[in-house]
Image (cartoon, rainbow, N blue to C red; front, side, top):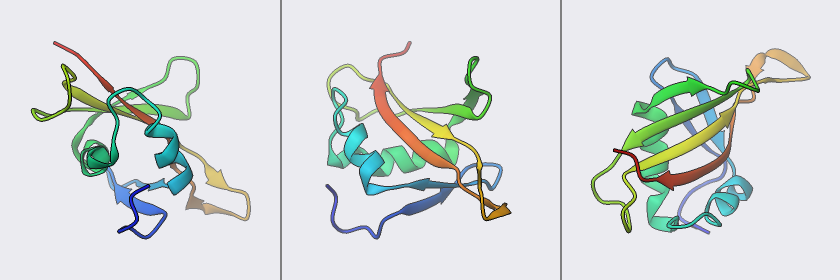
Length: 107
């Protein structure tokens, strides 16, 4: 686990929505092929700048995708899956969080 960050890490997407990455979700993402601790900054950049597409089966889930030149193996893009919602104690408080992240090869 990356120890030089304070968890959770909070980042904003292009529309200003706050998204949280917990250490537990980061550890889960590290289980995917090609993912390593060096990908963390690209994951955060994907949320900040990536294109966003809604999941067809779960309207509260979105995938962010962004291209990088320096990914391992033949991977070309980072994909970050985010679940959007509200905390029960306050409908004004975002509880948007990263479910997972992984690498893909896309032309």
